[in-house]
Image (tube, rainbow, N blue to C red; front, side, top):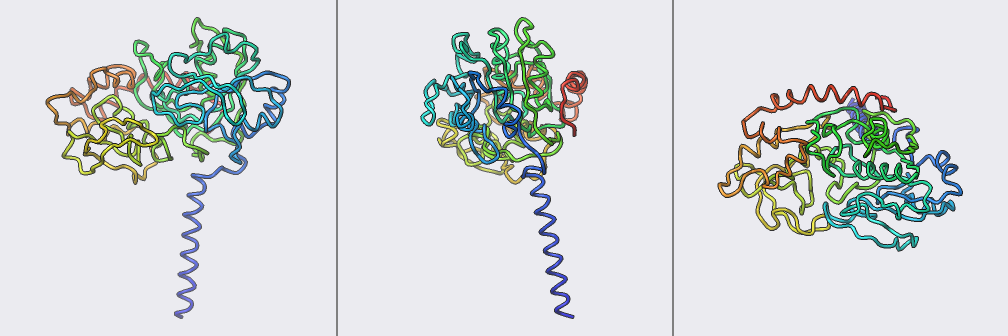
Length: 398
């Protein structure tokens, strides 16, 4: 009797473990038959053969076996003239906003040209002699993450200089839903070039098709655009990311929280740059009623973090268990209500908050005491309009 009970208990534990493992595996590992664009060389190598190419990529441009795309192309005798580096650099180790320098890739000897800072758009002389520019970067599907802006400028330069653009598509960690305020044209910038919501629910390859199709390139030019689609990708499933997309988005949790917490970058509140859990915590010296304490200090991802060396009070969200399929304004509103500093306004003087939000409406709603429900209700009409545009460019099903 006792032995049977033990056997049954052991079997039950095994089944529970297998169920949990299966659920974890389905969330974090590649689904059966799934491939990124980079892992479908049979589609793109024939198109690159005997061509001179440029490549826009960084540390995330990996095949499933962790081979970097640049190394793979060189091995397959594809002639790469130039590597173009986006924000954070080719190896992905530059701080947000830090100037990325031109140089040479030590491993291959290929020249590197920065597409961040004053040279966001490839110049005609930088594209001279190039037939195709391949774009392969892991994006995170959020409007103010600058890789979609880099793609836009690349497409514009390609259209103006008769250079084809080829995008190797990758998963969007925030795919399958749209949310947030839609940017208004007056607030266009490198952290928001188009009238889209904060979360727009398209892969970077689909987004490029939308930019082309809606004639959002300068002077309505149209790029020659080739998309290498993913295989067996579904928009509402979540897929593993082979390398962190930038220094301060080190894991799935920071990416999950990023659309909700990035608004703090326009305030006197830290999002944990200079800690081990960036974009998983928020706080400031002037929100003392909040329970968690941390002190930003220089580290690999932040050489001089905001509020460097100052004790901050806030919340630790690193154990937040919900897979967010919407923007959570609770933390932003809570920080605003708890902020007590007569010397400085909650929002930065340069109103970078408005640039991130895409207009001044969200800031004014917060100041006036609007609830999260009221704020989100005000987004509804513009989200519905964008949804109709988005639907024209969806390639992958839910």
